[in-house]
Length: 150
Image 1 (cartoon, rainbow, N blue to C red):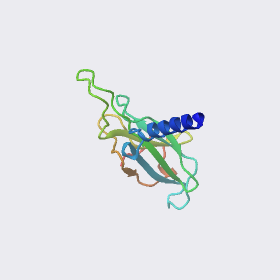
Image 2 (cartoon, rainbow, N blue to C red; image 1 turned 120 degrees about the horizontal axis):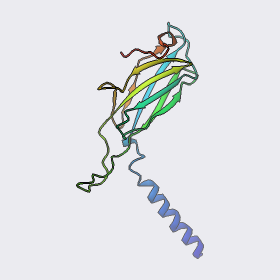
Image 3 (cartoon, rainbow, N blue to C red; image 1 turned 120 degrees about the vertical axis):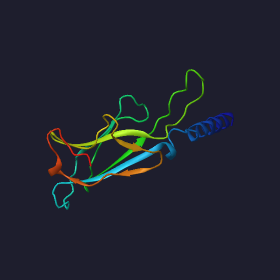
Image 4 (cartoon, rainbow, N blue to C red; image 1 turned 180 degrees about the vertical axis):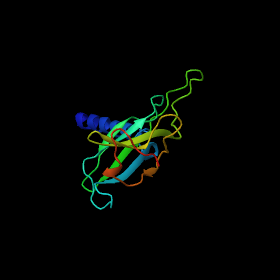
């Protein structure tokens, strides 16, 4: 009986701790989706194309990641926005970023298409709990290390 009570108390504490994670909730997530085709008529989906999220090296708001297109040529990214560390001067706690600037590129063999570069002042601005849908492209716009920001 004592073991059962102890297990229930431990399980309850675990559930409370897991349920209180403010950094894994939908309020800290943003999403990116798009479609890639093999033909210029955009009728045949391109499966297995790598799509890379490129994060500004000076930012800690998000992490670089790579996803692949599915059978329908669609890619979908779950982008976690991470909190800033406490301010050393004021000692205040964590704060969530209001946005993050990122780049996005697609890779097919040695060819690349850059949706948007994160260099300089360009890039996509992601907001928490939002979805960015990028324009559809086809493999003919991929160049060897080149791309086209629209």
